[in-house]
Image (cartoon, rainbow, N blue to C red; front, side, top):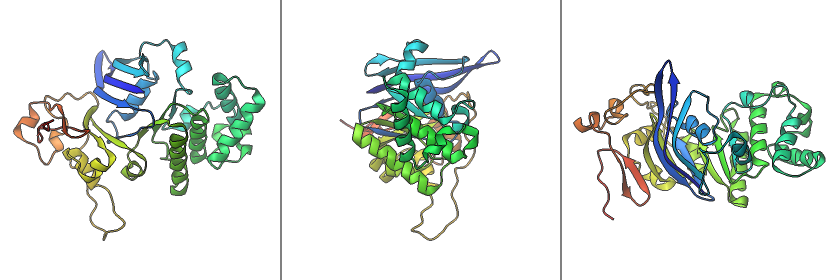
Length: 318
């Protein structure tokens, strides 16, 4: 359904091109749930905004993004508006800057629904009430403005706005960050139910590996704008290959075991635009070799549908 090939994003800042995403490729099939993980600054949100053509004017986007075979990067703003919401819906990381502060919640729903469906205002309001009920928000919220809601309520409104359109692809960028644990579970159940009922494909961006374990079918690990590993969820958690993936999983806390010292990844993530002649994780890698600093590793399939970019592995024999 969605094909991303060699997607590259850079920003022109003070006459310099700062690359933040480098040659990212993957496919998202109907009904698939792909989790995109990695530390802050790895390019996760930038990649999502690039797919939706929502980056700033100083951004340069190269490569290919195809939806059902149609190239999205070549669409005009008018053509892209027909795609966004109905075919690709996105739940943004910061709901306060995503909702219009001078419009009521009711106006957001009515405008969104009437843009994509030939329905009356009365029908749109009824759908809005049902969408809000699904995220446990009272319909009285419709008369309020975004600033009159709490952060968690604004996030739930954003999720309800996206889900009420029943999109083909849902891009969720840290959608549960501002929510408490009980509401977080409810939202994840909502996404799972939508995915099962309508076979919606989900691209889930998160730092929370516990959510990944519960929701995803596949996992893609980004570091410094590059793909480090991609694998089915079970394979990723059982047998992570890249040292960065293992380091991320090693930071998880288990409630089943006796408390221990919290693990951390040594060093700091690289700055945006930093250029590496070898592997970008090499300065922090506990398993690095001499070759890691001078030669960039290529992505290899080390087992069925399990890919890793690391000099520690050789390509599996077909």
